Length: 151
Image (cartoon, rainbow, N blue to C red; front, side):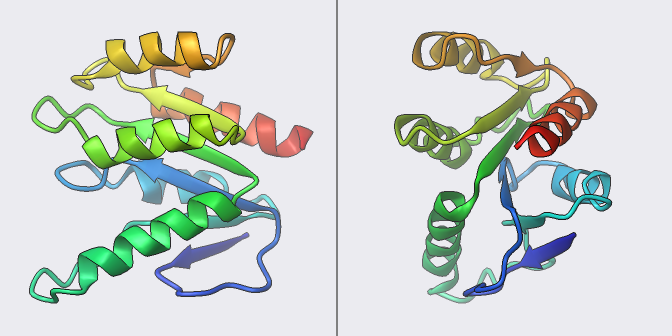
């Protein structure tokens, strides 16, 4: 497996997968997910940077552009909305909506403590009937692994 962190372009990705979900004010669930997929022959597009250059006026636009491109390059997108009572994770919600509208293959999880979990479950029940929204990161990763193996 190859983990890709902030590379502007990737031409040799194998079985590209993307992780999407909360970053700001959220635990580093991407690190756990990446480690759990390490034994698979896939490329994981991970949007979390080790450090974000807060004082660079171009950094946010570059981050949004990278995420936009890589979410569309992935064969499967895993969304995780961690327990975050103070963060609605609006960008991740927007990205989930775009992925649903574009017909992306998805695995979605939302912790019981995620403030918008009920909304995510309700919206997806209409937009993607039959798509299960997992309640734990472990179950979401397990479903992601199953989807990768069956692809």
